[in-house]
Length: 432
Ligand code: F0G
Image (tube, rainbow, N blue to C red; front, side, top):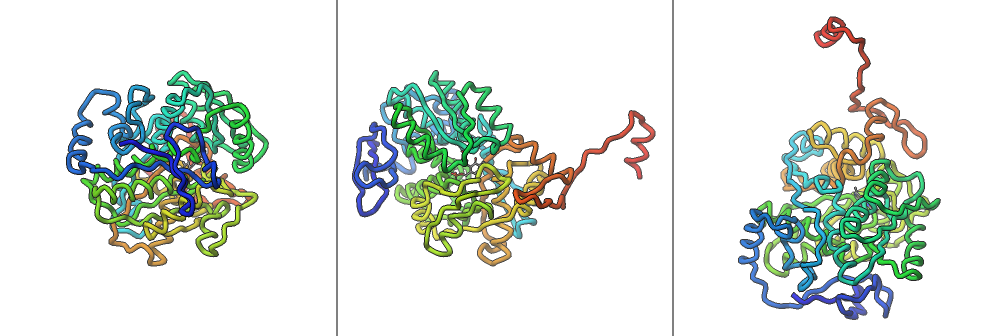
């Protein structure tokens, strides 16, 4: 299908060619989205084709993003795709987490199974492919860690030059290590995420560098496939709720757009409700939904550094998607995130701190009666357990402190035990 860029603002809706390198509407400054023409979609045939592609050895068919390319804006450019076989992430049943969250049943869609360990790969394969289509050599992003890891990997794989900007001292070593290892030029800036995004936008304009933050509408297109794949895996039966963590709110925008398109093209008849969970110290979207006035959080703080964002650029899109899906927003404390994360670990699944906000949020939402115990819930775990091992070690050994210096209680702690090299002594401990 031939697609265009459109201004997201309802009063504007200006249209632009799909190959214009813009991130905001040149007319009114609004966010941009990709729109498809209203043409006949072969829903049942596409479902069959998408299912058949899973058995192919072809790179494009194996990708859990490009398998759904009929609903992506890259017609005529599939030969330029850069793929690391992203997507294909599992749906995992987690009975212990369900009980903790007050549900009869809970499924995790685990995006940490992606090539660089987070959901960013779904979007980045499209973002970098668009950079290639536009003949851009240099690409840049500001990141709390996962976007930079993903951008570094995909752009290096494509032979482009990745430039990464990160808040100095505020991302986990696992993620910083990935950016370095994948060969990105890495700048650690002494400012927070929101401040650096403003800086990078100036630099991108001045130096003609292609910007790959989630303000880039092609990232959002790729992230839609998380929902396409989830529903394909469920034989197109929508759940009642989809729960996800919220930072810059790109993923919330992508999920809402995916659900709208699936409904518009009759893949599904019911739209699941979105529940967005934020960390208490970085919850501008939560406050906005309460007060109906958007105020950025000047000094966001949370140990879930992935979602340590005070001024999320995609909030107008996220607001629209929550309205369309009759969704909700919740916020959770550092202690709640840490405990929920340990429970997800005890399921044999594991995730990074930001992802665990989902289970902490579900627990609060079932307690409040917003989500019923018998409802069908899918929570999206956005990042792999090994992204932030330092956090894990500190929690389990009782050394984790919140950003205000208060101790996090290791309620589900599991300390390593130092023992002598002595079979009798160890046997005695194991039997005791
Ligand atoms: N979970 C993880 C693990 C993340 O890395 C992010 C965002 C989010 C949730 C929130 O997603 O921003 O779309 O609402 N990480 C970005 C980054 C900001 O730079 O890696 P969002």
